[in-house]
Image (cartoon, rainbow, N blue to C red):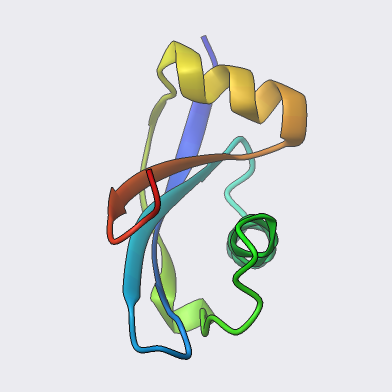
Length: 87
């Protein structure tokens, strides 16, 4: 199986809510991870969230679980929700 790269990410909304999630992708590319984080937030209707390169950092590499692998294969990245994210 292929190894994916996990970027530990924090975003802060204009209302002050903190969202903690991992961006998982096959390339070890911090710029791409940040772009995917912003794109995912936009799919939630959260355009005002602040997420920067300092808040989207490479964490580790591992084989992605099957559900995340499906997301990566279909859209180029996966999101693993941790704290403060919508269900």
